[in-house]
Length: 464
Image (cartoon, rainbow, N blue to C red):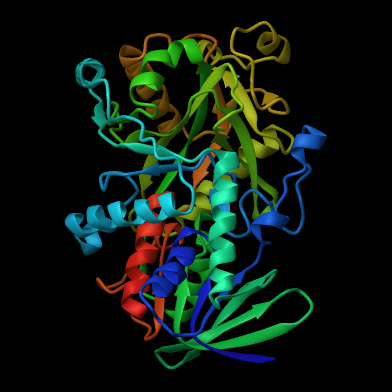
């Protein structure tokens, strides 16, 4: 079956959504089709709140797949600074990115985002935290945060979904893009399938916005069709969980402390990411049954703990060019040791060179908020370089937040971010294949909700 459109967007994550949204806001009369392998927001549901353990949903994980991507089931934090969220400023300029962040933030407010912004007050206390960070050899990145909350994010993205459909955007749920339609060096559309039937969608412009979930797929497509790209950064790390009392000041003053360091001896970039005060550690499943750890923070429901990711950046050089596969192998090895589950270990046990036992977790002040995590030894799977960097970074953070490197601090693994394949594009997001554009985290240029949304807005303006 053949369909025709002016613009086809593959992936209904923030980048794809805001491409279509900005085209509508700009008065475009072009026909827009969005292809999404998952379901609509109202049909997305993780059964874990009933089963109390991950059941590895098929054919995909509802937390990572569907309208708004992982956004609807994340803690929903919008970083309002161009310093955070990837390298898009390097492509189009810092001033344009910051201006578009401010514009995109207003759109989120129109659809129901909380008006309160975290991190704008308590300037004297921020100075004190920064002073301690400098002494520890870390950089504190100033970044105001608008926190949607996991449950609020779902209602917000549902409103955007209905708005797009009401205004003529056709969303094909349950369809996966299997390939591109190429004629020489020009993209003419995509081939899609729902497992029962195959369709072709012809379009003047094809926008690939498959998110971190689709980063490895896009990497394969780029290699198959000679789409100019290069290996970029891959992040391998852990999700750290401590008692709220340890993070009390930072949570109150900053809500999210974005710290960056380059610990010896390797001096890789290590950073905190996605801090969740009173939050919950969660599991996400990717293709090939890969289980990775993440964190959520609700507006209303709170735990006794704060969790935050610590990510170590890896940049590979020749001859190696498969950083996504490398990170996946690390995750698979960790999953193997955990019998298919997320693994958790106490920081003190890592320093003592021993595994953690379940009975030790039960006696701890820090009780895991991911109850089906398996106590064990994450160092048996984590690469030495990454683990050494993470240990050094945690000890440095302890100088900023005393108690962060306590014996009972929990480390969950694996926390992996798949956005390493960087597609080569010009400032109008044109690839070397005419009519083909790549956006968001899968393009390698953004990280996170806001910057992916910003890239979508800029793409929408180009397509009007």
